Structure formats: structure tokens, C-alpha cells
Image (tube, rainbow over all chains, first blue to last red; front, side, top):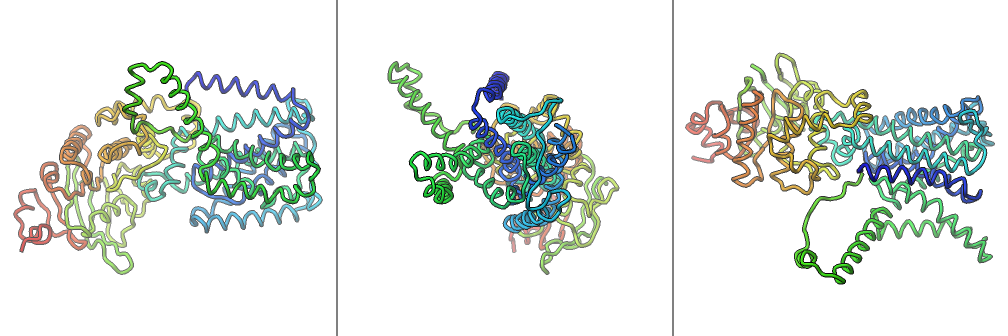
Length: 350
Length: 250
């Protein structure tokens, strides 16, 4: 990314974070719900979209982050609790990832599914740490000596952490660790032949992805003020995978687009139902409508919203360019339209 | 001897791919390895590179046993390889791939990764342009994604990736296969140039005899997993057994 674009992106983030304080309570709730889901989706995208390791244990990892941060937050840890949630998520992710060193593809996916069920069970029975089925109340986050209580403040914090995570992961992909993820995703045999320590690279992917997911879990705990086993069930793991499918794997923007879609579409269906006084009917069909939308994506745009928007953007810029050249056809424009360029460099996914 | 391979054998499900193979290579020497398809040439290279673990024999490199080491550990000993078929690695540029080669020198240690994360890789890029991309004339296309390049250029990038790890032994698996005659000659020239500049040892599996004859100091011939002859280009061409097995002469 060029310096100018970096500055523009940083300015946009600062404006968006500041803008959170102008939102109403519901608007702020939607912002932090999307941002927190997007952070976890960034973690899953790193693991699945960039490193090629599918996981169905994302929900449980969010839970590990939430319970760790909740317990430490209640003990007065403050911001350190968010960091600790990330560390716990990273460690748990590495442990869940250990079978991936021997298993591949569907077999590994099933192993992560088993890990999800085991952790869900542990959330219910390790009562001293989780308070069991009734759930654990979490004190508000204390940041720099001040209690973060409002939805607006949590929206601003979540957006800021989303931006930091996004920038950090993007930076990571420009180091040899990140490049190794891509080679391992493409072909493990080639990766080995190139001198890449595949075991170490996979462990890095699990660690970083788990850390990011754990941070998202910590934010879930502080924003909802409650951590219950139901909140971190397989449903959440499936939602996370849906975010990748809808948004686009191996593209950072796909995580945000997918999270926005998965969080806001059910919400919009619910609101529409209330507006048309068909809340009960629409509420019942909400999950079905959401499922149908995902199937449509799989059929018509398997590369997700990110690819769809990129295509739309290109079509729009072609349209603008053709209108401009029709308005004033210069010799250069005429030459381009007669002899369009072939090939050229392809935009990098990251 | 820089490389001393003794009595290496490997089987796959009862099929003997390499049987009692031995080979010595000195520093600065280019040795060709030829033989008909299925002779075990690539398998032999894989045994040296750590991709396959031989069932018996020894692979001594500068006095250190390589047998039992994983491929990434073998590269850290100064042994790099190229591939017969170059993988199309999506989303990676020429420079990305060469940087991966440089990273294979010492592995991606947390310290290196942290330094690259914080400071960027400007120093490494400058070094790679000067030492690898420049001499191979790849600097102008350093920012291009690998899958947009021709097969010949991808082969050159694969060689650049191997050279970026600063090898003392270079294992080349059919470096000119799939290239045009002109590209093949250029690649052969590059290999000689690299040897002259770095004085590294080179083991080259190749089918194109004109390239083998013009590039290699010595040639070993394999058939059915075993070495059947070793000598200079002229000696290989004159040997009746080689002519019968490899060239199909009666």
C-alpha cells in the first residue's frame, strides 16, 4: 500500500472511531457486533483463506478468549484481560491445531469439530472458571483507569482493534512467515522442497489466528457482560465459516464484508418483520432466508462479496472510461479501444 | 569430496527406485545425471535433498550426514534444489519467492519475523537484487506475480529462489525441460556463470544431451535405479552400454 493510501486509510479509521460517539445505542451495538465478528473472521481468514487450514472450532476459541478475559477482567486486570484473552486463544488454537500436523483436509476439519464439542462441554462443566450453564457475569472493561460502559465506547474500541488487527495481519503477510502460509496453502510438498518448515509455519498460523480470535472473544465478554456456553456453540463456528464464504477467502476485506452480511442481514430481516407486523412469521423464516442467501452466494459468486465488489468496481470504471473517451476521443484512447491490453499484472489478494 | 553419497537405496512398496547408488562431487564441479525415464534420477536428488529418506546408505555433505534431516534442515546445510515442474504459486511475486529462498537459509525464526514485521525488508530486497535477481536479469520483473510469467521465466525464478539460500551444493532437476532451445542455452550459461561466481558444486539431472555435454564437467548415467557409468562427456558418448540403455542403440 502506498504512503498516501496508508495515510488516507488511517484518517478514515480515526474518523470512523470518532463517529461512533455520535451514534445512537442501537447503531453503536450494530457497529461493535460487526467489528467484533470481523476480528474473529480475520483470524479465521488467516488460518483458512491464507494458510489453507479449515477450522470448525472458531466458536470455542472465541469462548476461550471470552472466559479468560471475563475472569481476569473481574479480577481487575483491565486492558491486560483483552490481551490475555488473545494469548489464551492462541495457545488453545495451537493445541487444537496439533492434529493438523498429521491430518489434512476433511479429516482435520472433523478433528476441529471434535475440539469444538469438547470445549463446549468443558465450558459447561468447569464451573469454577465458567460458572457452568448459567454463565459468568463480566464486569465492564477498565481502560486507562476509566470504566468503558457505553455501547458507543465499545463500538469505538472494537473498530480501533479491528483496524489494528487488519493492519497487523496485512503486514504479517509481507514477511516470510506470511508468504510461507500461502505456499503451504497451495502445496505442502512444494513448500517442503522450498525449505519451508511446514510444521512451524502451521503452528504460526494457528497461534496468530487463535490470538486474534481470542481478542475478539474478550470483546464479546466485555460488550455482552456475560459469557455462556450457548454463545460459543457450533452455531458461532458455522457463522464464522459463512462469513468467509460470503465475504471471500484469502482477501482481508472479505472478513469485514462477510461479518457485515452475516450480522446485519438477519437483523434486517427481523426489523422488516417488525415493520410489516409479521415479526413472528419472519422471525421463524429468518434462518431459512439467511441459509438461502448463503446457497445463492455459493452458486453464483463462490469467491464472495469481495470479488463481486471488485468486479462491479472494474465494470464501473470501464463504463466511466468509455463514456469519457466517447465524449472526447483522443488518439491514445482510440488506440486503446482498438488494441486492448492483454495480460498485465494481477492484483495481489492481500 | 564436498558431497559423498555411498550405497543409497530406496524402495516404494516393493519397487526398488534407487539401488546402491553412489556419487562424489567436488566443490566447483558440475556433474550431470542422465538416464532414461524412470531410472531413479529425481528420486536420487530427493534422497539428497531430504524429500525422501533412503532405506540404506549414507549422504555425507562436507563431512556431515544429511540422511535423516528434513528438507528445511538440509537447505540450512547449504544444499538447495530446483524443481522439474515449477509450481504456480498464486498471489506471490518474483521477489516474494526469492525472499522465501533467502528465508530458508536460517528458517523463519521469531526474531527475524519480528524484525521484518517492524522494520520491513528493504535491506534484504537490496541484497537480493544485487546478488540474485540482477545477475539472473530478473530485477525488472521482480514485482510481477509468478503466474503471469512464461514457463522459462518461472524456471529462472525457481533457480533464483534456490540461489537466494546461498547454496554450496545446487541440485537442479531438469533445469531446461520445457524451455525453447534459446532459453535452454541461456539457462545453461546462467548455471555455468553461477558455478564460476560462487564456486558451488552442482548436480544436474537433464535429458537434453547438448546442454549436458556443454555444461557438465562429469556425467553419471543411471538405469533401473543404479549407476551404470561415470565419466567425461566423450567417455559417456563412447560407452556401448550407455548407448544401448540410454540411446536405444542395439
